[in-house]
Image (cartoon, rainbow over all chains, first blue to last red; front, side):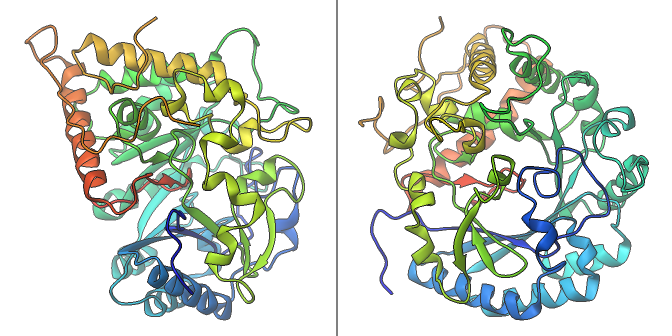
Amino acid sequence: MTRHEGVVPFRTFILKVANRCNIDCDYCFVFNSKDQVARHLPARMDVDVARVAARRIGEHARVHRLSAVHVVLHGGEPLLAGIRHIADILGIIRDGIPADTEVRFELQTNGTLLSETWLDLFEQYEVAVGVSLDGPPTANDRHRLTLAGRSSAASAVHGIELLRTRPHLFAGLLAVVDLANDPVEVHDYLASFEPPAIDFNLPHGTHDDPPYRTDPDVPEYGLWMSRVYDAWLAHPEYQHSVRMLEDIVALSSGVRSSVETLGLAPPTSVVIESDGAIEGVDTLRAVEEGESALGRHLAGYSFDQVLNHPKLLHRQDVVNSLAAECQRCPLLEVCGGGYLPHRFSTGRGYRNPSVYCADLQHLIRHVQGSLREYGWNLHESVAPAP
Amino acid sequence: MQLRTPVPTSHVMDHTSPVSTETTPTTAVLDRVAARVQQRLAAEQTAASRTGDGSHSASLILPWPL
């Protein structure tokens, strides 16, 4: 297997170690979206699948001379796989990847099952833990209820407080935006846990099934996130980053890498399902049934072979995969056309601006205006203030 | 399509003093952000990849070393 110049390798490997969850978030792209495939997949990733995954990651790292790879344990709720099973998977992955490739582990959880025993395991493998929480209990309870319809907030907060006792394991908090929640209240509440990072995901939506708005002519999500930005800057006593906002600042300053929802850097993550199937962008399950499927399995395909899948070609030519109006937009290098699933329409596929186009424009201009006000020299690619 | 701006081979972000010399909450936070952004720029200068990485939206840790 030879290395191909110009091909962007995978660097982050999302392992779906569990395909069940102990809560029932109504916006979940895995269990409550158009594609219901997860319900038919193995409840947890078998160790034999993990062994093949480790071998494939190792060969990819060797071919592309990757000095580090990022392995994220995901789900469903990954802790449902059981502590011994997760310990086995972590060991298999670490042992299966060449010793000269650093493996950085991360796990994204709802936090409700965290315990000291789990944290002891994460210490052993230096697993950074991110917790999903949408804000104070009243905010979190809008969407993140248990299977019995009860609040999951208290148990999630208990898990976060445990994590705070081991801050080196605490990756941060991840919230989904809901316009019904007060952005300042949400930000300040999440910040009070002193995470190193907070991030906000916009609700899944497409042009066929757009996100909720009270007024379609108002960039409500952009206004919401702008208030988060202002709240963030108003609290120097907290040390956290707000990833989406900091990435807008960074991209406006000439940085190329960012979260995949912004910028023009190609997505470098790939998903391995519990049965060993490989997916590119798993959140495409919110678009339509089968949209995330590549028809490729670890047993028969290397990651290099998957790189050239037709559904992943946008990674190799990010700009030309965008809608014409995005390609000529002055905010292109910061916005990047927005997150791939948010561009979808049945008529034009992914060659649309994001359903959040107006929101992103508002937010980016708000951030850049703030930076100019404080004397920040923006990158030459940034359009002058309107 | 040619990008409006070529990928910079070097870029030094010059975070000049704010309009007011007094440290405000906003400038305190932006000073920290500026330091992190400088680190990211420096890391990208030495990285083998010139295109950057788009990290997964559900992953909170940065894929590059700082």
